Image (cartoon, rainbow, N blue to C red; front, side):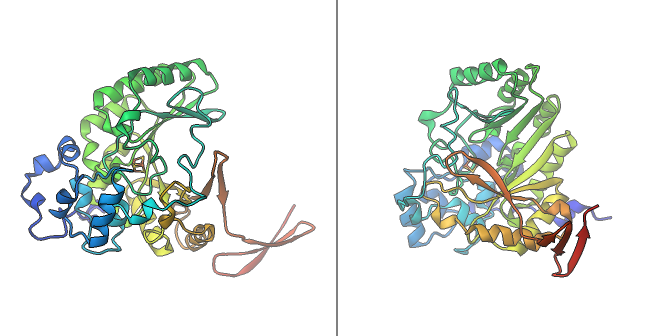
Length: 379
Ligand code: SF4
């Protein structure tokens, strides 16, 4: 009998037949530390795996000082020999990253503005963002936190983490902590276990969320030992960031299965990106795959106006149209919230298409997803 897992395919090790990673023994390939160590960071390293165009080579030299380049061999293996490949666009620098656009900000969500102590953003009353590292397996070119991520010199040190923990301990209104970064899964199991134990020991902390893209860019990170460690700290909510169905490989499926079996609730925050997923068919295919992977599509995020990311941004109307194309056409489970995070730190607002045509003295006229009109009368 075939299983749902059989509907997913293992990631290739590169678009070339003679890709050097083909010879890497499976045990090494599946070792997350090896994947971290062997990340592609230079033009030469990339050119052993991917054919770069002259424009990509130029952008690499021009941009990689401003926001580092790093891609795991696993994620690089998904890059097709096609300039429009969605994995390629998320991984390789583009010359437009250097454009200075007046509406773009280093800190588009005002995260520093709501920072009572270094490394904690406390914007909403009952929850905080806790920045634990500036490292990630892959530096996504559309990242909102370019100002921090990949910058080793501003990395939170032991003292800063301690300050953050003390702030959370001292504020009894905080019931939800989002452990973020960078990507906290770049820490060892032992270090994460220690951090989560400290948070779990705080009586008013009810929920811990882990923000991670490792499920997408380094699924080998989710080892059975890691999943067992996490299980001891439930309830744990894992927030991840799949942007395209191509990222839903058998390796990602297995990583999500291990987390879900350990009791973690996994949700996805897709960022709407021009030329990558600004298309309802792509988003529907992604969300349907995610549901098979036990990942709930949670948000479609309008791309933030982060410096050097204008080439990724879409009009707000695109997101609304994608929701219109999902609602009714697929299970409600596959329909996330489309949100715009207010630049400057105003928080999220959710947008939905207009289904209410008119209201008159308690009689409401709606149009459904097939364009049919119906009435609902208030009691
Ligand atoms: S994984 Fe997240 S924090 Fe890290 S570079 Fe990508 S978007 Fe930024």
